[in-house]
Length: 348
Image (cartoon, rainbow, N blue to C red; front, top):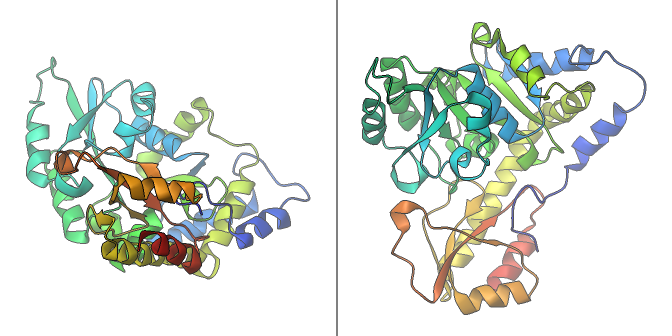
């Protein structure tokens, strides 16, 4: 049973079928096909406005190139200290922007607005020695499976507007957050003040389908050159479009995300009842972080269950005993209730 990552799951059958359906014949390259244009219009419908959409191959590329589009000399992108951009992208955003990432504190993986204000204040205007803020980035859902609600996004957006900074959303698990909040994509993004979204599909049933979405197309004027220079302009981009076509058809993307979230809640129920585990915090998307007794973790691994040990977030440090470990379990569209219940029996 695989709980290591939603990246380990395969492609949803309907997405795989659509790739096969578009595999034959010929079509204009580099995003000029009818299918590319159709999917771009679907993004407009989803976000309830005209947006600028650029397909890329990975979430790291989406984040790094989005930050390149708003880079400033001596620029600092402010994000939570445990954000994926800081912890898991091997310095790619710094590499592409020639800037830095500035860590911001906040409990449960979310930036605290007061801490964000303090972070912005570290870079006084015209004080060249410190550099200057270039953007603010939030991760939705966060690296520890929590979610910014609409009011929290709005509070961060107000700070961004006050300091004339673009607000970026790392949406590798965009759909998982969306179905939890039960809001529209527009409400979770531009209506709450978000300017740019790294829109992920790979973790939610696609093969490799990611996009950078600008809520204001005028802001994307230079982005075609940024993407090309970064080697992210795919010649046969219709195959990314084909994934997104199936992903959005009949709201498959919301169905897969909802299922993954439900499987996490089912798993959290088992973990909360177990005498060998306790929840580090309540999950809100498709990741759950239990604190397991070491012998229980060993028993699960011996039974062939894959999951990852996890470094405790800063606000949880010091609360885990010597005979315990924080672990991460991730569910996906492919996780079955039987998988969850078998794991639960091992922890009973």
